[in-house]
Image 1 (spheres, rainbow, N blue to C red):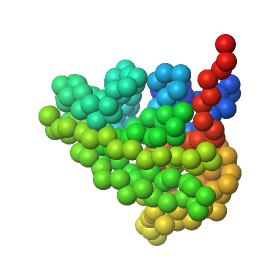
Image 2 (image 1 turned 120 degrees about the vertical axis):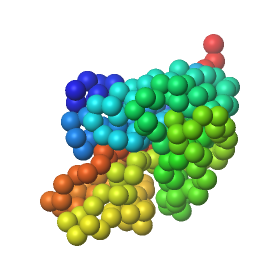
Image 3 (image 1 turned 90 degrees about the vertical axis):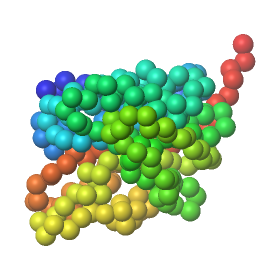
Image 4 (image 1 turned 60 degrees about the horizontal axis):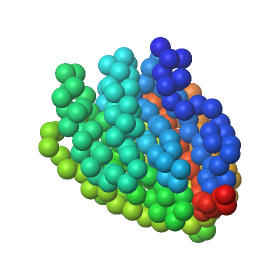
Length: 244
């Protein structure tokens, strides 16, 4: 089950070796054999890259199966030019219909325009992403909407921000900030911010590895209670049309 779930998430890096506009890396480490966290990234069209980070309530097989449904619905409804608020509103409607276990999903999706650097996003109760600019990483105070599959008829609203070449987006699940040491102390947003800023100039893969190493140094021998999932995207240069 662990291997099947891992194979459902993009796990070959570099993911798009032919693309010079961006670099991306992601990793999930489930607390149990199977987890409820998931990430995804895919090209919506030639000039738009979608990234998804989400966390299903609950643990084990029911959460893992609901994860597959949620991941599939988000990807299937993310279409060129479609408003991300509409995407999550429709996904929420469909998830509510198929939710006999009473689960819910916190989720963040962003679509990066590789020509302009505009990142349109929608947040359903998920953690605040960090954006790394020239001055370092800073949490974006994005107001989260309601969770997916929690209530029928919820309407979601998209927002946007702009990335400049060299800027990075770091997104994660609460298993990162709520990682706990033997004294029940939480890893927390402040320590995450410090770890990100200590490695801000490094590649997405190096940043994810550094954060994971810092979490391990913090929790030491304490058991892992929640899935630890993170994704880092660097916008490197604008898309340029190839001359025919």
